[in-house]
Image 1 (tube, helix red, strand yellow):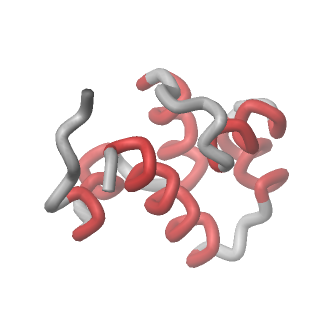
Image 2 (cartoon, helix red, strand yellow; image 1 turned 180 degrees about the vertical axis):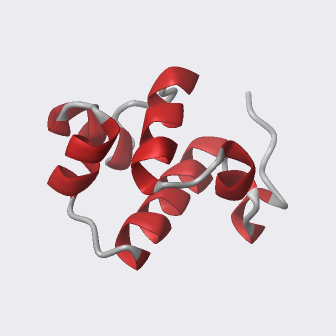
Image 3 (cartoon, helix red, strand yellow; image 1 turned 120 degrees about the horizontal axis):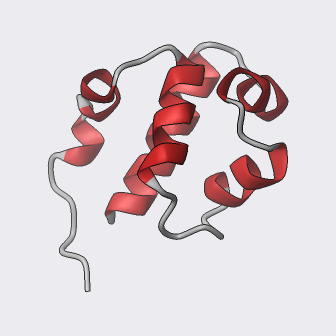
Amino acid sequence: MKVQEATVKRIQQLRKKQKLTIRDLSERSGISESTLKSILQGKSENPGIVSLKKIMKGLGVTVREFFDADLFDDLEPED
């Protein structure tokens, strides 16, 4: 799995765990719904760290908590 795929899966895991809709997360993170959908659908292959940090804040997790998941253990090398 690549970093982008793992990141999207982690956002979805945390969003679903908290029973947040995409609209809810958009409002909580201050990121437009269209931008958030683009990230979650993999259309935005390299979302910026600022956007990711806003999403993490919207999810109520720190950077450390976000990346503390098995998804990130065995990532494929990037091209």
